[in-house]
Image (tube, rainbow, N blue to C red):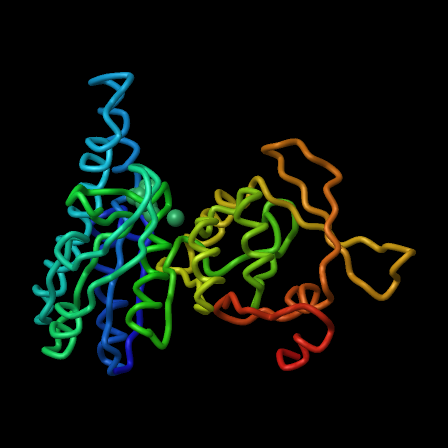
Length: 311
Ligand code: ASP
Ligand code: MG
């Protein structure tokens, strides 16, 4: 089975208009004969609104009820996506994580998906259905709803890709891949074509919001290649990039001790750490020169030979 996992972030499903566009993206993969598994986040702002409500109820709101509450955002977006696909004549339905189920371990608010029961989804895919799975959540051994940390839908997508042995795992977001810098500062922010898990993890930890750090660890452990694409039309792109990358700046500098290596300095406005220098392997610099779609996060290994195939 040629399976693709498509994950849509909160901004991609932020309005009804955008959800309709997401449905067209899904239809595109279906037409290319993929078996499509969709993962969606809540509509942008929805999770924050729910958390706000919990604070208004109690400043010591129960962790297990927190998970029940905040997981509801994904229920809304998933049913809207499925509803649109049905409207377009496709077989689709929402799958809440407990219906699959996606089993988690660990504490409420910060669980990890450790097992996915594939049977029902496989049967559904074989019948031509498009399952729309709620990101960011699961069910634990006590039958309670759990969530897997803010931004956790990325990890849901990666674990689905792992368990279903997906051919591709594509993260749709509001930026068209991973970028080197803030386009407000440089005339042209360069898209990174390939990036290692380690570098992506570093960027994510420094504030590049494009992916959740935990999900990159999951991808690395399971050797899942990730593609990052935009679900937006081009005109929205620069605004979105500026928003996501305002805290992250990359600069190339020359180190006389290692004249053949390219070094990058990162500065997180957030943490006011500057200079904060990282010596990265030359393949990173190559990414500056290559500007192709989409960014793929690969296990490049380290050492000079690893990037040759990308030249
Ligand atoms: N909706 C959740 C959040 O806002 C999960 C996600 O977006 O990935 O954190
Ligand atoms: Mg996210």
